[in-house]
Image 1 (tube, helix red, strand yellow):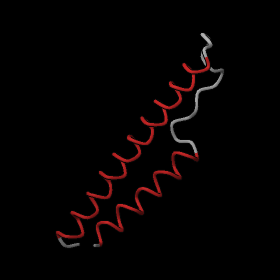
Image 2: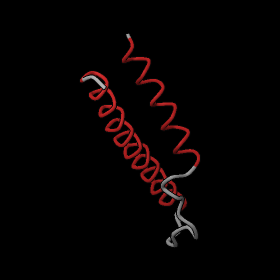
Image 3: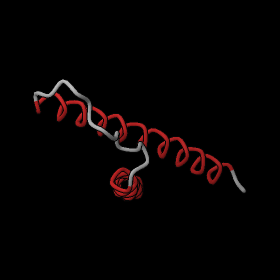
Image 4: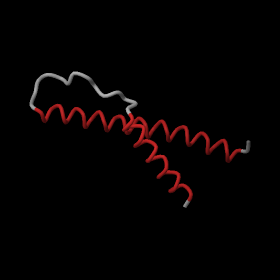
Length: 72
């Protein structure tokens, strides 16, 4: 493995972690906003899991976009 491949591998790992964290934080913020706008004082019965299918789908889409940008 040459240095370029190692750097690319590390960058992919870091970007994946950052994107997953960012998408999860955004989903949590939207969930909190939705709970507040309902006007109820009770929290919802079940909180969404941090690794839901929607989150994974968005993460994959974002990773594909970043790869395309990196190729240019």
